[in-house]
Amino acid sequence: MAETIKLEVVTPRGAVLSENVDIVTAPGYGGEFGVLANHAPLLSTIKIGVMSYKKSGKDQQLMISGGFCKVADNRITFLVESAEFGGDIDVDRAMRAKERAEKRLAEALRKAEHLNQARAEAALQRSLARLRAAGHEPS
Amino acid sequence: MASLKDVQMKIQGVKKTSQITKAMNMVAAAKLRGAQQRMEDFRPYADQFNDAMTSMSGSMETSLFPLMEVREVNSVELIVVTSDRGLCGSFNAHILKTAERQMARLEEEGKTVSLVCVGKKGNAYFKKFGKVRKSYPDLMGTFQMFNAREIVQDAAANFLAGETDEVRLVFGEYISVAAQRPAVKALLPIQPLAGDEAAAEVAEGGDFIYEPSPTEIMDVLLPLYLNVMLYRVMLEVSASEHAARMSAMDNATNACADIISSLTLIYNKARQAGITAELMDIVGGAEALKG
Image (cartoon, rainbow over the protein chains, first blue to last red):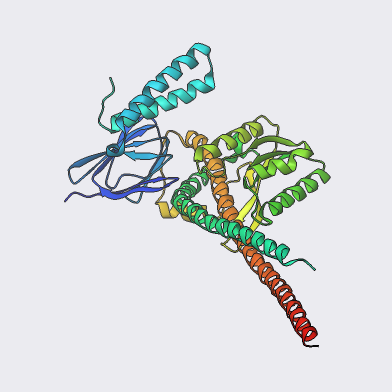
């Protein structure tokens, strides 16, 4: 049995996950990064995206929104605003959210409203991450 | 002396009131459980967050971060967090009094004071002072972290623009179901988390790899820290509010019971007096017939 690392995902609404896993892949600041057991201490910011982990050969995917993660003492802790399991995601709803965000983004760009543009972009990223976590590769 | 009918109506009225206060007591109890649950849920996040902050700020130079900059204080902003609704005893009044005292003291020292009111009650009270810069009604019950973010972002922007040199939070601290007390906490400039930094660093097992650079991470962490602080305060105020309402309504229900029992006494006395008078009439009449 390979060595495992303790994975914890904590949101303001409580702990979402606490498990011993084989590998964790997360959307870090400079791109995706993987963490195996006995990784060196690390502190990284996390972007909106898909975090995946492997436990006894099975892959699991979570949509996570921004925050940061900390690796220390063979334990990886994600502190993120929200986290959803791929299986719990309502694909239709995410699809609608994506379309809505795209429309808003276009609108904001046309009117050059920076605040709305940033908001729409964040919403779009969240919906795309949801779709990806649910296994729908958006076209 | 009130007539029988009047007393009876009064008793009915008080009974209705006590039904309402009792219901409110139970609703408050249920909501308190909800708010406590939220606080409980939030604790791991806050703890982990403080952990990370502590391990970061040990090696940080505070002068690098505008949000930590200590300036000469000319103007202070108070973020007053109250409930949206009343009927919770003296809970809001205490917070408002504390805020007002702070305000008076700061003004005595020649500083200007501006206010941000979270929760309806603060704005309702401070409107007449004309110092309310922003007011956020109707979001105490939503328990959304992004609501807190909007407020602190605004306050931080104001601080960075040099409009305020210090920001403090005035709120109702939740101690237990039976005890809540007004409290004041400094929010900005952010103080470096002192104390067990060294201990924390040793426990973490030394140097971290930072991704991106520590400074950039701090630029993300610091605003988040403000967000965490305010969100926690909002959760506490909500829990305190419901706890205060619960005991206020419990007192009211007890007071109703007291009034009902004293009114019932008056009612019975009046009824007895009526019966006695009637008996006297009958006896008097019978005596007269005998005659």
